[in-house]
Length: 185
Ligand code: AMP
Image (tube, rainbow, N blue to C red):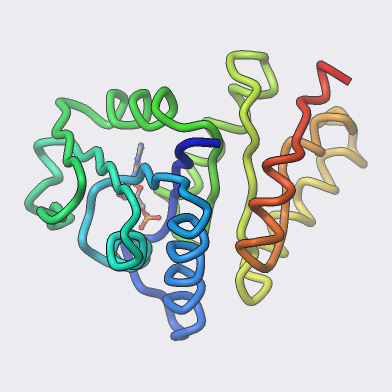
């Protein structure tokens, strides 16, 4: 994996554990020589992960729509900041540039972006690994919901495996490196 997209909160969260996890993920990416692709903001966990990668000497590509550059405070010290015209173009470019996708804790925006890459994998539009960094069990309710979807037969069991989960960045990156899409097994 050359680059990974990280979706995460534009807020910092209620506990400093979230920021620490963003820094740990940024360090881990830089150590492995994996570039970060993200939404280009300086705020919240988005800023924390980008700063950690930059500080550790790694590559960071930010992609931000013009209309959000002010509101989300575009990060001007990135390796590359790409300004685009729409949210759709942002997501499209993030997906194209990345070899895998991670969701750290975040809000509705993070979920929207993560669900798009999961659902596109389900219908075969890409075969790249997708994973949740489950800091402090933040995603436990979502993981239960996925189990419930399988149990109630609204999600095929084999597609539940598209959603990798780990508490530590190195574990998640290992799982992603070893991922094979269920359609190829
Ligand atoms: P949040 O998790 O709500 O703090 O949002 C994290 C990031 O997701 C922010 O950069 C938002 O701009 C972005 N975002 C919010 N809604 C959408 C959307 N509909 N499509 C793509 N990105 C979004």
